[in-house]
Image (cartoon, rainbow, N blue to C red; front, top):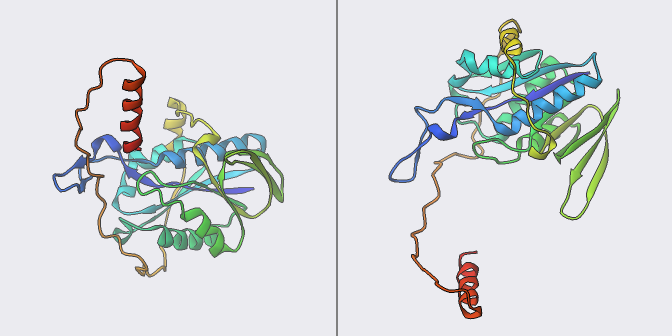
Length: 252
């Protein structure tokens, strides 16, 4: 079984600076793997443990951050056997509909049985790429998967945690599965895995996607901070508790 895993690089949260106008300065932010994609990689590794003949190929689409050797090794140290990169300056702030088209083109070129993605990305969290990818490839697609129950040659069984129940789905392969953050706890690579990552193949591919802007990304800004009300309620009588609850309801 050939498994492809979407792996996006996003800016390190703690390095992002918020300017006075609310805009975000990521010029000094180091690239890191999106947290949700770490769950997808871990899910692929778990599948491979029970299907020894499986191979894992990480696919990353983006801009200049993909030139970072440390980031490439980080992706490969977490379990993938190889890495495919589609990099171009025009993909620096790529949106989900564009990512899905390029990913689909890449998947057709390298071949696949199963594609795993995170439910969303660690930057804009649009939750669209996996669903759009499945639609373009015309294969089975399921999002918000919280557990992969079993994997066979032509199908897999997955669970989705809904509000009041657990949904069990049998999915025919090939398929695209988007996993939730609840599916696993990503493991931290050991020194042997980190050293071994440098020996794994990294293939750079190009795309014929014209990057047509159906949607324009105008800006990304931090939410405005609300001014503190400085309301202090002293005492624990029923009236004081009611007053406290009343203020909470206004906030909610």
